[in-house]
Length: 113
Image (cartoon, rainbow, N blue to C red; front, side, top):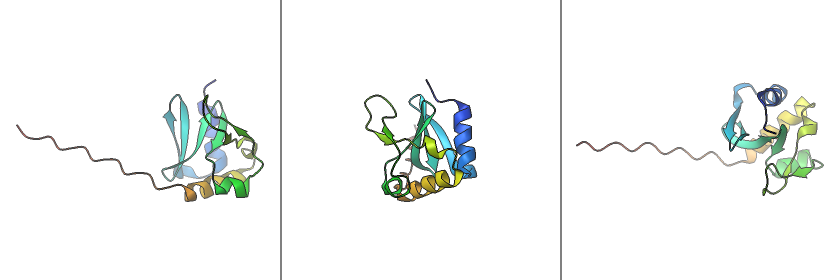
C-alpha cells in the first residue's frame, strides 16, 4: 500500500514546521525533509525516521521496521504522530545531525558552434 496525501498532510500538520518541512516522491514513496535535509521516509502510511543519536535520546523505544523490502530497520515514529511536540522535536534534532545537502551541479554551458 502506497502512502497517501492525507498521511503526508497529517505528518506536516502535526510537526508544525510550516514550509521548513517538505515531502518529495522517492521510489514510489516519499522522503521527508526539514530545512532541505532528509530526516524521514513516509512508506505505507508510516513514518520511518532516520536512525540517529536524536532517536536514541528522544525516542529510544520506537520499534524498528524496514521501510521497504531489503532495507535495514528504521525507527517507526507512528506513535509520535499524536504528540506534536515530541514529533517536532525529534524531526528538528534529527535534521540538526544530518549533513548539509550537497549542492546541485550547475548545468554545463553549451559550447557555441
